[in-house]
Amino acid sequence: MARVLNFSAGPSQLPLEVLEKAAAEMTDYGNTGTSVMEMSHRSKAFEGILHKSKDDLRKLMNIPENYDILYMQGGASTQFAAVPLNLLGDKDAADYTDTGTWADKALKEAKKYCNVNVVASSKAETYNHIPDLDKSKFNPNAAYFHFTTNNTIFGTKWNKLPETGNVPLVTDMSSCILSEPIDVSKYGLIYAGAQKNIGPAGLVVVIIRKDLLELSKEKAKTMTPTMLRYDICAENDSMYNTPPTYSIYIAGLVFEHLLKLGGLEEMKKRNVAKANLLYGFLDNSKMFKATVRPQDRSLMNVPFVTGNEELDDKCVKAATAAGMINLKGHRSVGGLRASIYNAMDLAGVQTLVNFLEKFEKENS
Image: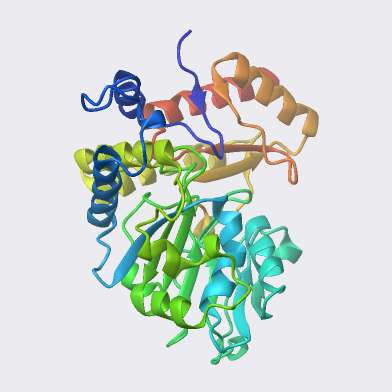
């Protein structure tokens, strides 16, 4: 069977080159006679995989030397607790923004450990935009300022970083990491679940400034589980226990693949072209409508609707039959959504646009 076009919000489509290399090495990685799946995480072979993947990620994102790269588990949702437990130190408050489902879940989890100051929210408008920030609502004594860079369900993205002075910026970058260059030095901590642009589900990448790592070591709350402590993870080279070895291996192949393509500058060009193509169609369509105001639109997740639930469902079913899967919008909002992560090429988006144009003509 031919491969379908997978527009899933995650786990997402992976680069075919990566899948083919992994398939070729499935039973024998590097003449070891074993699969990475069955390889000891303490072996020299796996240590090489681990360290090369981190080195390649550092090159890709231009991560400064005063930042550590941690590989953790539990999905980005586990970081909703890990962040306050590690970063509060002697403080009892943090600033949060509420721009979508995962941002809301993050702040609710943080409320278990500290006083959460919600500085801005777009919840009342069904999260259809990134709210303007009023600096007078910032807490200058906050331990950190948390936001979700790209909101997967609602298709919004922060295109301008909050200016927080000495308060460290912490962000959940799960659904847009590696989609374009960023200045890592502007952040105190970045975390991202792997299943969008990095690799298989099961791995979480944490990029943390070393002064915050020291804070974690010195003042992490006594209740912090060992497996959530950033300092323990760093001291043990992300291998305090058995890490998600195969997810790390695939992530390393993805990083290598992106470097060969030209890095994140090249990915931004490709992602802008894909997004412009799809949004351009939606903005000129009489049937379909994008749900996010233009200045806040995501490059990765494009939600849209017809305004008729039955027609939305008909479109999803027809697309599936045509080899384009996972276009149904999140169950909490309905409609349709095309997630066009790095591994989805321009030809795939053009195929989708051609299908939508045809569907509109046949159902108008």
